[in-house]
Amino acid sequence: MLDLPIIYIFIAALLIVTVFIIWPHNHLIFRETNIKRLEKFLIKQRKKPALYLFYAAANQQDEEVEQLIGKLLIKYKQPNRQALYKAIHGMYRKNSAAVKSEIARIQPVEYRFYYETYFQIEEGDLETARANAAKISKLWMRAALLSEIEIKAGNRSEAISLARQALQSCRGVQRYLLHKNYERELPEALIGA
Image (cartoon, rainbow, N blue to C red; front, side, top):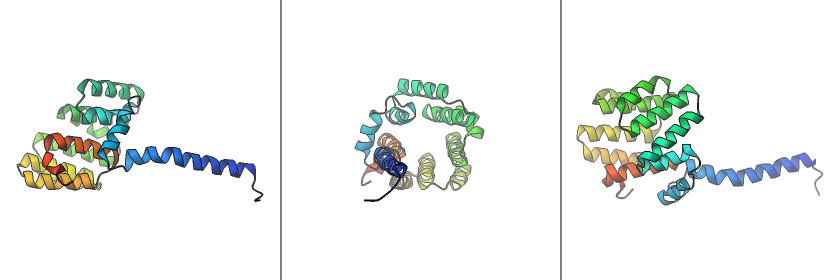
């Protein structure tokens, strides 16, 4: 038998248990593509406002979204976190002024570009929005924004193509949110996706 100190055995056992407990949870949040599995997972997250917010927003549960945003604003006092939740709330309520007032404090920068581009789309500044979308490195974010630009520009077929691209490059809870949004606003994007 190996003569390993008990501490090494304990650390190895702890790592193995951690991997088996945390990996499935993180896989669902960040990597899962099955919408039914994601929905089932999100429904069970009712006591975790940051996760349950995805379900409530995707399913347009207005009162629930209001309560969850309130809880998150009380829980997280960091200015950049507050700005992000306020921007999410403004975006959900289609209140572009609320989004604009928070843009400068949003971190990381990629999220700031995302919300800034959303604001520009809502204000009808599609060329500036298109230029800003090009700065975003995450394909799903860029494609989702470009799809919104094309909807506003009246190019539905291009919007559908970009929405499909966003869905194919997106995983986890973000995919769930996009899928539910396209179910309502651009159902053609889900055909064959």
